[in-house]
Length: 264
Image 1 (cartoon, rainbow, N blue to C red):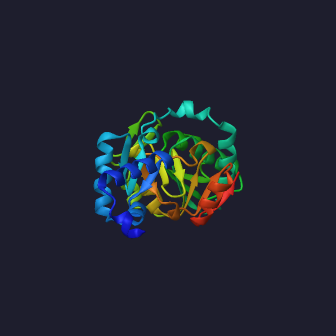
Image 2: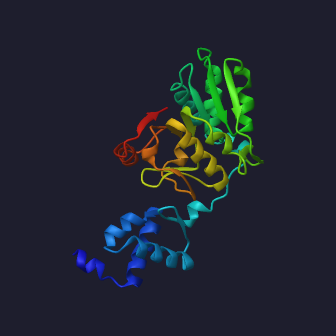
Image 3: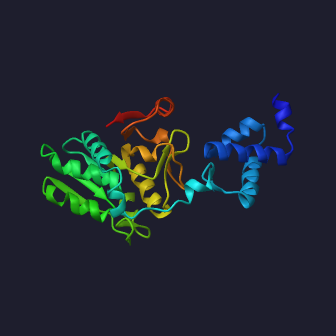
């Protein structure tokens, strides 16, 4: 059977790959290489050819359906009104993972902002250092000073999310080590990992992930199963996923990846 698959004409192989992307929204080069019995170099060549004539986008390690990667990003203020109660519950559950004396990195976005609000409400916390690239989050944490020390990364202001991005946003993170990182994004998938629609912010998210001993991804239900252009990290790089609900298929897939689930 493997021999028959290996002999598939390139046109037919590419047709089947396109059908797979259309059906699942994401394909991985390594998986296609095993499935079709060809090298990863051949698969990449197939994906490049498919991308030229079809609505897919090449991403690190694979390809995604363009409908997910090209969607418009909401301004921070508009996103605040979406799933507000859901995000509040996620924030409380995530903040419960922090202990006095911890150092944490806190990402930009409305769900990480809910974590910040929940942290401020925890009057039992003391000597917590928070590193953030979000001006909104930094101001939200101000009432907790001096119990908290708030470090802002610096960088170039991105008005849509009031975030600090390249150039210069990752320089501070390169010199820091934190106990825990709380990261958000616009998609999280058991195979494709944690992703984000904006590449400039994705770069900072990745730097926070690498600077932390442990990482927590916070995502409301609308982010589950989505795949966007910028890859923050594989699910295996996260210790915990905090969300509000998963269907049985997604729950099983995430648990199989080894990540701890916290349902808020």
